[in-house]
Length: 138
Image (cartoon, rainbow, N blue to C red; front, side):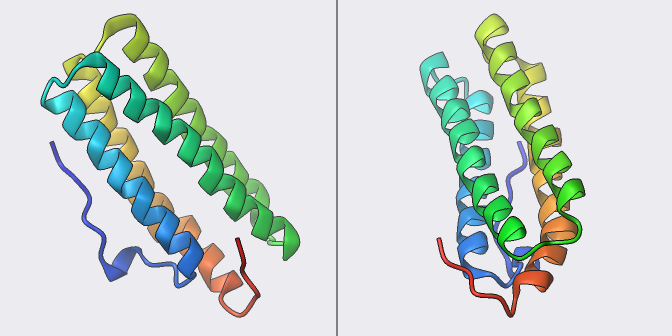
């Protein structure tokens, strides 16, 4: 399956957010590898569960800074975060019901990888531009 490699085109120029994006990429790549290599169901489920938890953590970081600085496109950004969290939840439910199927692997590969790249290069880069001169702490 395809994987994402971090490069400067994925940077939003906010160190905290970039570091979290790198971790998300690492975890999506791990999920894809676990499903593709037919690792034990526990490994795949644990990786998907971690992804869900880490996504919540990362999104709450972005959302905190959007609220603190009155980001004008916050509603659209929050809607995209909800869409992603819902899809990860759905993938976990599918995995629990059906195991590591080829369809799940394809879903991870096409949806998660593509969504994250498009989200970072699109809406997150706009957020980064907005936040670039603002104080950002964890």
